[in-house]
Amino acid sequence: MNAIAKFSALVAGTLLLAATSLRAADTKGYQVTGQVLEVTATKIVVQKGDDRWELARAKHTKGGADIKVGSKVTVYYTMVADEVETKGDAKTDKKKEK
Image (cartoon, rainbow, N blue to C red; front, side, top):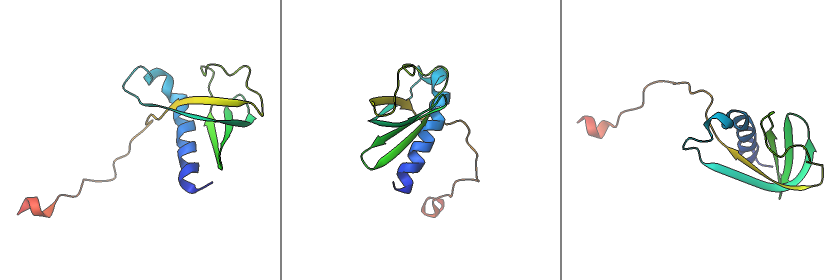
């Protein structure tokens, strides 16, 4: 699995935990469908093509009681920022300054 796919899966899984309270807001929803490779109380791992998606689970995650390894599932998730850190001012366009 390439680095972008791994990063996307990690971000999606992390953000899944924070998504419940913000789901009613203007948050775009996503989904991934594939075969379950692993399932625990805190995560579900899905194989989609060549990519391995690891998504976090929380107590409020719906439909988690009957998930079994080998089952085909569709996982719905959102991407929500938990924190934003500013790294400095935006660079100004020098053409606009003249």
